[in-house]
Amino acid sequence: MSFRKTATNSFFGNFLYDQVLDKNHFLVRLRHEIKWSDLCLGLMKAYKGGGEYGPSVYEPDLLLRYLLVPYLFGISEREAEQLVNVHLLAKYFVGLGVSDSPPDHSTLTVFKRRVAKIKGGRGYTTFWDKIFRKVLRQAQNKGIVLGTIQIIDSTHTTADVNQPKERQKKRDGQSLVDPEAKGGVKRLETKTIKTRSGAFIKAVVPVTIYGYKTHTSMNAGTNLVTSFTTTPANENDGKQFIPLVTKDREVNKNLKAVTADRGYDDGENFLHCQNRNIVPAIAMRKTRTAPVWDELRQAPLYQEALHLRSRIEAKFGEVKSNHSFHRCRYRGLARYHIQATLTMLTANLKRVMLLTKMNTRDYCVHPVFVTTN
Image 1 (cartoon, rainbow, N blue to C red):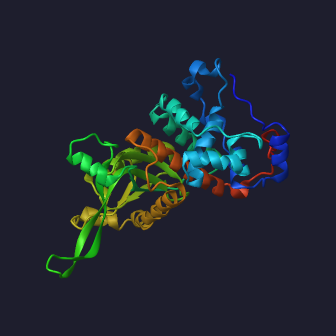
Image 2: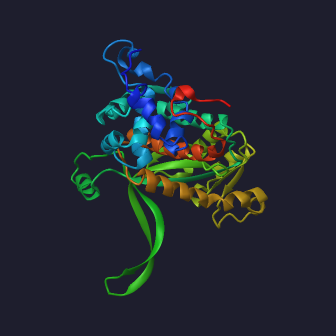
Image 3: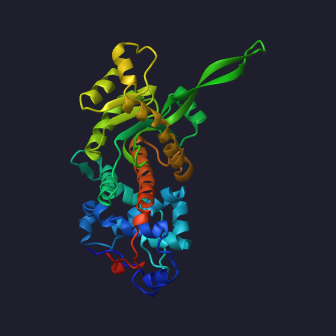
């Protein structure tokens, strides 16, 4: 295969990097300690001629790392091109020499289209899901052991549209900019409102959002996201519980309990877990007063797992504050799924580097000189 050559193996590449880069920096470790070529296995078949003829192309693992830069820094893809051009650590992480200019940001769009052409296979919805699962497998191969408790919840992402104009188009019967985005209730809040008579009263007001949802399962022992699904914002949370638990059982062999809030209180969810010897630590509605429910509430593992439920909120705060997951980068559910995958992938990569920090081995920046002692 013919790939575009970079200056990484020249004076303006590894020699300069060896002199100035901190070998323990997050981006340097991330470049070396993740097997990027393994993540991209099978990707070349989406290239014309499989990359064996025609113009030279960038290596898939280089483009994958380049695509992660906007998510790592919480910036746009256009800004990522500018950043990689001047940021030495980012340029090294991508796989470019000091004198190399980064690919045009439009190259990332072409790369995403190529990846979208490949089916996931073997139970994976998309090739992105396959990459996400491979990173989890690499984390486990590094000695990271998933805990026995999973936390399930959902977070909203606002659609990339002008909402007043979108509502007006809907009333006028015109085509919407993002027809797959839907409105949903984010939460209920008690607010003081002013009535027509001028009096102030307290009322429960729904806080709505227009866009999409990512239903997420996070391991309580490692804070790694182990599975997720994406839907429009009006999707019922409880319906995504079983698909998430099914995915978790494939990756987490230590699974003993799953905790979630009242939005997941559904008889099918309880039954699904109990039939698989998993404790359904779901916050119950007050109407569940039968002795069988009281017995479940008193179970030690139920109480322990339910106590950990709110921990996932910190993960949602992280991806929204640091990785721009508060707003959609793209339009349409399929593209939103790509954003969700890359966002959760980025969060997991950061977590893996933190969990393995104490086990970091000495190595030179040049990958050829990585030691195994």
